[in-house]
Length: 123
Image: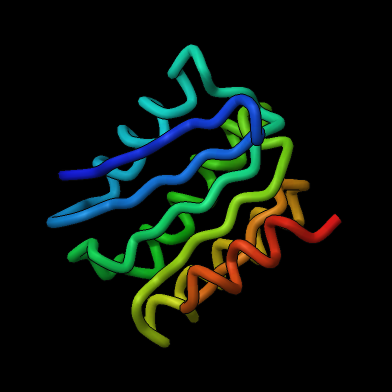
């Protein structure tokens, strides 16, 4: 599991770039690392770019990730954009996005990081 992330308290923004091989537990661990960072605030918008991650989750793992985000929903009061590399991942993560949005976590899935940023910047 390799990643870079930056937190900008001034802009209320988190940018995460995942790289390499991941599994579901790696994703959970990374989310926990970021949300426990002293600079992080639940009101910050986030872009999570996983285009360079080697991981295709099963539908059961998508549901498990959705449940994980819902349990942690106090950590995500603002928007979370996830940028993926393929139509398959887009459709799989759309399942998660639908589920988390129904539970008041504002998520959206993108194939293009500039579109993710546009969505984050919408009022």
